[in-house]
Structures are given as C-alpha cells and as structure tokens.
Length: 172
Image 1 (cartoon, helix red, strand yellow):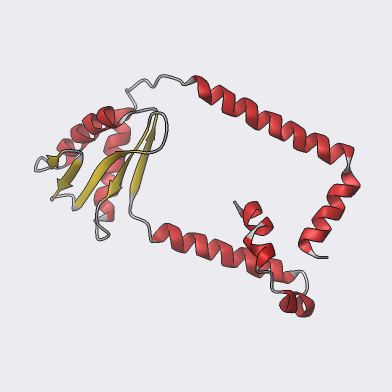
Image 2 (image 1 turned 30 degrees about the vertical axis):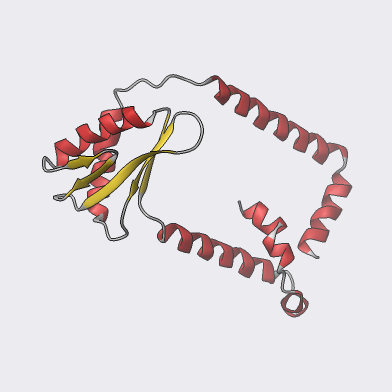
C-alpha cells in the first residue's frame, strides 16, 4: 500500500518547495504522514472479526456458541446480537464474494476486552472446523507468481530504465 501511495497521491501532492529545501528527507516525512493517516483510519473503525471460508449462517452458528459460553444472557435478533455482560453488540454479515463473512460492531462505544474474549472463544471453536479449499485460491497464487515473474524479468532485462524511472519518481 505504501508503494501505491508513493506513486499516486504522494506524487500528485508532492511538496516541491519542501523538496528543494530539504531534499530526499521529504520522502521520510511523507511516509510517516501516510502511516499516521493509516493508523488514524484503523483506530476510527469499528471492531471487526473476519472469517474466510465460512458463510454467514455457519459463522452465526459458531458465534452463537462462542457468545453463549462467555455470556449466557446473549440475545439475537436475526443476524444481530447483544452480549450485555461482555459489553459488546454486533452483526454478522457477508463480506464480498465467496465464503467470506465478518462480525462487525454496531456501535462505537464497545468493551474492547469483551471483543478480545469473544475473538479468542470464536477462534477456539473454529479450530475444530474444517474449511473446504476453493479452487480460486490457486488461481490467485498463480497470478501473483506470474506478476512477480514479470517484475523480475523487467528488473533483469532493463535495469537502467528501472533505475531511471525510480530516480524520476523519487526526484533525485
């Protein structure tokens, strides 16, 4: 993600005047600014548990089992739950294509300790579950290795062009 940031918004909003005064050290400040922006975004999102390889119904079943172990007073309304003794409430939803589901907090003020306990209990319950592998996994790995191969080929066949392009991007 840092690479995409450097090529995209950092190039677009690059502080040329600061670069003229401080030189290459401006990139360090830009990367630190990006990391703080990313940390800010992460800290401002609701707690979320993502489970790969499981549909919403199966995750709801395992989440119910885990929550009842921790808090017998847990109440469900459809796919939403409230665990008053843990101080958490959330909803089970599908996350994109395939068998990816997540449990997201439904309000900002939640007990972090309750979420951690729930995550551990859910993880323990899911250790005994066998997940069926998906054939698309192998395709993504093959695509990744093909892209790495193309990058390696470009690096070894045109090293001076790559070095010049990097100098242009970093404005040495």
